[in-house]
Length: 420
Image (cartoon, rainbow, N blue to C red):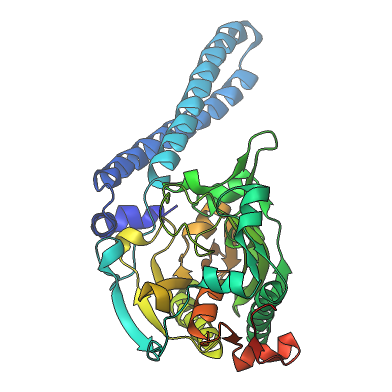
């Protein structure tokens, strides 16, 4: 949730953020009212508790003949205390529900608007020009016998696939390069659980407007994660940690998404699927360092795309397309030749203290007090990258040149050639 003190001290900042996101501004005033009611209820309860404690001493010291009447008064007071406690508990819950619906206040400079209102910060490389008609990745996958979509559909239904032979090896090479890149920057590798408890999924902010994209197992009360960000955020839940230096993890996991509402969109190939692999960077940092760490994550992502010899652009995502947890998000989109456009390969988000407040992750300051840390996340490699790699590096005969950075992970092979 957002910082309650920010809500009291600068409600206009929160209102402006909600407006830029296209979200409810009225919710801010509801939260302010709920906060006032909560504090009033807590004060009333605490005053009655103090009165009850003082009256208890009076009863204990009273003469024997006066005690029955005083005990009766004490019982009445106890009932009032119990009722006040219930009111305070209800007021706390009402405030938590209301303020929890407010999205993370955006950072200054984030563009207002929706999905199409992003700002392009920079581009790298020129989209490749072909002297032949390029094939899309699905056709290449079939020609090279490295992606088997029909059997994926036969086994599991639409939006499933098999990576086969060099296709499987190419993904593992990509993920291994990503892991080595993360290790160079002192990320601790983790292979994470892909099933998490509801409180962890909610704590990361994923049970909001996109909750219908998440697979839920009601018999077990567990959610399948669409990114290892969820498990990585929950890793230090309810802990006091040391962020005098950034605490960095690289989570390797299979991911699952329903892709609800995407019917008819990107149905061909493996661009938008229900299951994929991903290496996710996750950082816990001092909030004062969060924006610098955000730039560090973007730098690592750009290193990876350049290593894969892809043309791309970096965009500053508009407020209405951020998701509830992110205060700012940068996407990197690679050029996909047969689509004639850039498509997202990575995202990296600065979630400031939003997730840490919900998951109770704190650090102790020099004054001995604890305060929420900042959390950031960013993709460093995922199955979707194969789309851009295959299409960008294809040759006239249907073979695909392997980027030099990936060759050491593939036994030095320079090209994947069509099956005999």
